Length: 402
Image (cartoon, rainbow, N blue to C red; front, side, top):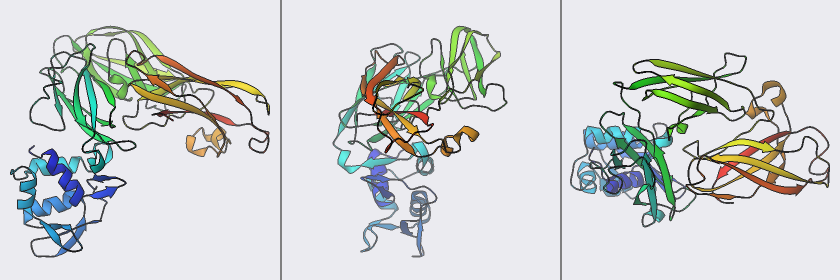
């Protein structure tokens, strides 16, 4: 791929859409981008549609589409790309980065902003690439598998949007790994990436499933594996290659269910070892709202008295585990049951009647994957806010400061 960072920004700004203070590639459903084909016929469509027509079929657009000034043709895109014409691979990259978690965006207000991005890989001496640059990043490569992290400076925009960067890790004998991370101005972002070995000597396969206990309903659970870092970003069902050995434990966790642990899992060379969790629903439903990557934190437990009395003071707590450094906090929402007690589906809960806020905590690299309890005392409000009745307690965790 030859697409430069400057060309990406130019395309997002003039052949993309504005989302808040960011310019982004548009997906295939967007119809706000105007461009013209070689026969001067006007069209609207996605970033991919516009770029493809301009590069492949002699079309054009304008920086100012109303005044029709600043003509954008294939020569202009070549100029913005450092003098290199866009290729089919560049067009494919635009297609793959126009929606979802991989969607390319940038903020002009954050172009001059900086952050520190730190990477730790499960294997030493891997090559780490940033944002599809052709050569390994010299500050991050070769990578290391033990702290301290290797770090580099990257562009970053201020909250709430930040700047997204793509990390690609390559090492002979291992599958290529790709992660997308969002960083904020002046932040130090640390990420651990698991490199999955290719099938071969001393490598076996784990086949991981999780089910709701007593049913055949499959659960999309996260998991930790003894001695392996970074795999908690994946969800079941999942199949992965791992070094042959006996793993002391594999722990499954999922919002609304008790943790489930399987011990003494033996993986043999060339064999597939199935590991299945049978997870019991927790007494209270717990929902975690965080931004991508989705598993920045999990809620391990929370404590709330089963009976509350107006104007009395009680202690409330939420126990969290976090997988990246930064600030985190949690709330407990008391919600009307709605149809939840029949369906056990989060969307069927009624409105929130009272939010119990808990203090924020700063997670350092020494706190990663450790249980941290957030607790605070509150006086229960009166019947005007919280009428007598039964409520469902929902623990909610957030990344960032209050």
